[in-house]
Length: 455
Image (cartoon, rainbow, N blue to C red; front, side, top):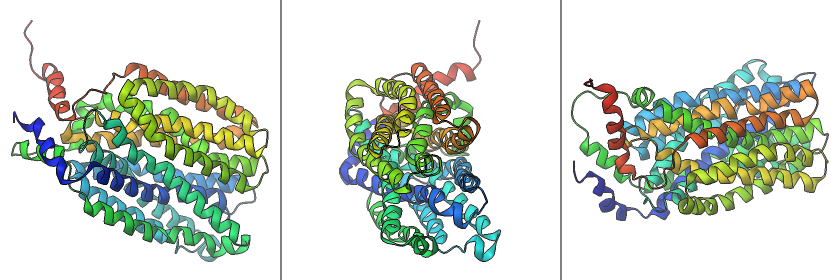
């Protein structure tokens, strides 16, 4: 037991950290391409083909409702896949999540529409979306841990930030694929079959991601924890997290509220806002999103390097404060109807998202012991996604329908940023944490609460 913390250094040479980071990034990019492709298609395709309604805004809201269904399945995926990740390993669980996501996305490309099979069409779409959400529930946590548990303390935020490049990169690919297809094809052809090409491409991307994930090894910290684990009955990792680490779960989830709500408003809802509320071409919103996502992809690692120097909390605090301010600047710029102003608005919002994303991976991993780390980070991450992310587009549409102005949505986003700000102020700095010591530190903290004391 005494030499357990030293085990990782003996294993790191078996797989270069750059290869591990590249594998994690490729996998998350593919899975988020699949997940965001659905969200982008909800604003451009599904509201017409699967949820026809006399009011276009109602059709869009119904499409977003099925989009949110994917988030509902994510906590279940976090619990099940987190359990497998903590018991069977990070690598094998990530391979399973990738196959589930790719398979469900490819099936969407083959689905009949409402005009062909009626109500069965949206039901099948919802079923595929549930599988997507389940798979994604276990993706992010495993990808982050695959890097974090191979890495070193000094540069952990930098290496752990690469899986977080996956969401904006996947969104960039999804928006780009639909924009390209919509741009080169007549609208009738795009709505008839062109959109299916983007979903069918998932099979190719999954094959690439699968090949990369099969190449890397299991994390040294997980292997050391398995060797050190005593024989006998074992408690469920998710149960252990809920019983002993629920404070860390709630606090970590709360720090993501501003980031998650902002991301879906800046990268998804804005397309609907520009198209349906402002009456501009859908390509304006897509262009702004692609520019903003490209900025996020480039800047996340740089923010992460800064986080390794000054800590996680300063980056979190700055991003949360910026969210509160940009909530109102964003709609002031977008409401000008100027393409350039809209691009600046989205780019600024996604730059704030990049700052958040640079520290989330390292910070979450530093909160939980190795034996339950996959379950802990997955539950915390997906709890925020359900509460803040899934509801953001729906709440935004409802607020606009009620008040007729984007500033009402700005107030909502500012509240999300304030929640993140307060949670960050309550959190401790974790930059110098040794991941191999987290479990032992937690045991020391819990022992007085579980053993009788003398008065």
